[in-house]
Every structure is written in C-alpha cells, then in structure tokens.
Image 1 (tube, rainbow, N blue to C red):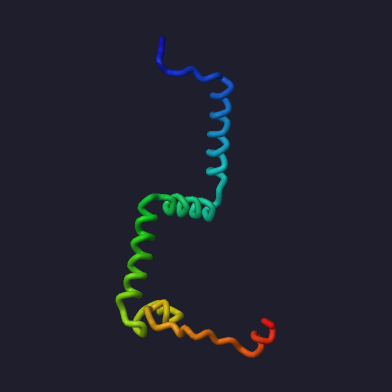
Image 2 (spheres, rainbow, N blue to C red):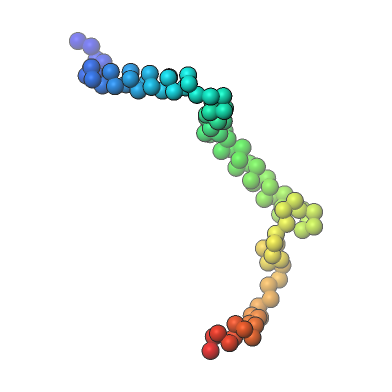
Length: 100
C-alpha cells in the first residue's frame, strides 16, 4: 500500500483544467501584459522590500544629516527640523468672531 494520498478523479480533472486555462491565457497574452506580469513578479520578491527599505532609510538619513538648505527634500516646517515653535497661538479676527 502506498503512503501517497489518493486524490479523487474529479479533483485531478479540475486541477488539470485550471492549469490548461492558465497556460492558454499566458499563450494568448500580449507583449504588454507579459511585461507587466514579469514586472509584478520581480517586485513581489523579498529582495525588493529590502531595497525599498534601505532606499527610504538612506533618503531620511541624508535629509537629517545635511543642512536644511542642502537637503534634497527639506522639511516644510521649522519645527520638523528641530526649530523653535512659537507657543503663542495666533487667532485671527475672523476666527474669533465664529468662536463667540
């Protein structure tokens, strides 16, 4: 007696039909669709996640390390760079009118 599990014929036929459907779809796909499929397969690998993580960490480190004027992507607010915040709130006359 074999240790391999037996698969019902219906399941084997279904798997074969699905495999044939995938093969036919790939044969009939255009060049653009095959290119997109290849690019998607390349991006879906774990190495891509590592490369993207290193790139983002390097970009952030470069922004923190360089002076504000030389940074490739400077912070939009002085407080984000470690500048002093003005603690006094500024309320315009228009905003004050709606508060009452």
